[in-house]
Amino acid sequence: MDFNLLNLLKEKRREIAGREGRELFRVFQNKTLEATVEAMPKGLRDLENIKGWGKKKIAMYGREILEVLNGTPVNDNSLFSFNSKSTTPAQTPAVKSATPKQPAGPRVLSVQELLAYLNDRFVQLGTLQVRGEITEISKRDNYCFFTIKDSQSQDHLVSCFMGRIAMNAYDYLLDEGMEVVISAVPSLYKTGRFSLTVSKIEAFGEGALKKAFEALKNKLQDKGFFDVERKRPMPEYINKIGLITSESGAAVRDFLKNLGNYGFQITLCDVRVEGDYAEESIINAIGKLNKARPDLDVLVLLRGGGSLENFKAFNSEGVAEAIVTSRLPILTGIGHERDISIADLAADLSLSTPTAVAAYIKNQRIGLIEHVGRIADDLAAAAENILSAQKEKLADAQMGLKNSYYEILHNQKVKLGRLAAQMQYGLDKVFNRFRELEKAFIHSFYHQRSLIQAHLHRTGQITRESCIILAKKLQFHKGRLDVAEAALMPLSPEAVLKKGYSIVYKSGKVLKNAADVQPGDMLNLKLYKGNILTSAEEINN
Amino acid sequence: MNRHATHITMPTEKNKLQTALKQLETIVDDLSNKDVDVESGLEKFRSGVDLIKYCRTELNKAENEFQKLKTELETEETLQDENPV
Image (tube, rainbow over all chains, first blue to last red):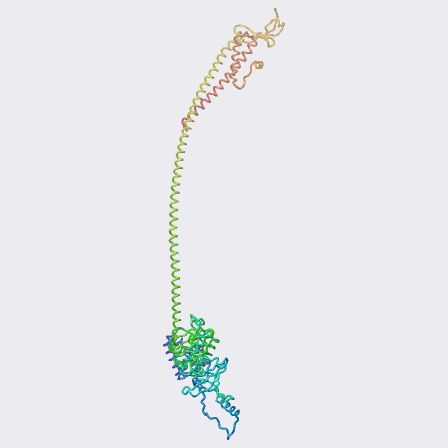
């Protein structure tokens, strides 16, 4: 491995890192640099095959690295090279020999032969480019005739014919006195009339170019190419950029230098920006990017300053058409401040210079970043507001809760106090009532007791009285009994016996008549004291 | 003696003493005022004597009962006086 070369690459890396303010390994890893030295790439295309190289890296640093490796600035055809032919514009083949080969020996030719011969020679000349002024224009529906006159001499004239296809494309340049360069094939008619069959007309010189420019501008204006309504707005977020310009031009450097380091993804499509192949190259680039990279946000068409001649491609109808038919919006930055090209007019947005385009994209990005920042701030503020509103709400709710709690507490206290007072009152009432009842009870008790005592007293009295009465009654009865006894005792019939009388019983009956007795009857004599049992002896009636 | 029983109507439970006394007094009246023969007089007399015996017994019994009740009453009164309500 060439370590000197590796060191040179590392030095370059340091330079890039310093320039872009990035860390070394972010620019290239050591492995990548080593692999690059090993591979020794010759062109940008070769870099694709080395590990660690991406399209972005190639676009950003490929050129610089290759310069270090090869020791010279690289003029490589880029990744997208549509025009790999030689860089030198094809020159009009000079008519070296105006004199046709002399026929061998004197020979008489028929007119037909002569015309055929001359025509053959003309054909061998191929397409010629001739400069002159247009005059004597005669247009038909599908073709036209005009004469091209030498700019310096009034007397040198050539007739020209233009068919349908060429006429459609260059009709606008057909203007009396317009200085042009025509591409044409010379031909000779049967009548001997010489004419140029024109395939292409290009304005020549500042004035003519200006005229041509105006003419094309008017034409395309009529076609509606420049209508504001047709133009697409630039995307709000430009990130993937399809850059169409010469990779070696000043325009791309100015553009990249002024774009700033915002991580844009740039796909560079190297095109010719002047010369014969420029138009085709630009048209192809627009077509190819539209087709192959639909993910791109915008196509940027750039060219540095130059003369009207230099801008030919950008003032061509083909490029204008490619711009108008592009699906991707196109942003142009062509020439210096004052230059306005057809491409600019047709573009969706045109800015004065490549630098202005870079500044536009950069400012759009900065604006977007700022916008996002503002939105973020707004969002934060809004969130803050919501939060603080919620906090306030919460605080209010808390306060409300606290207050309502105190209120409830207070109400409860008041209620309780009222209840307590009511209860106290009720209790007092109850107590008072109770006291009254107690009093009434005691009163009635004493009353009852006095009643009872009265009754008892009365009972005692009655008892005593009844005792007395009863005793009296007993006494009375006793008295009666004593009287009766005393009266009875002397009344006993047997009391006469005391005086000496006797009672005679016969068979238990008192004997009152002597005739009731028979001698020998048993008689019982009852005396005062004792009895005599005797028998009758003699009866005397 | 069985033969007296026919002459004396034994008093009913109610105020029998009163009746007995009345009978006794009737007997006394009969014996003092009328000309009573010995036989019936004797019978009446005996009935009178029986009535006296009966009345005396009854009176004694009543007096005893009365005295007893009177004592009880007095005791109760004393107790009541000692323990007023």
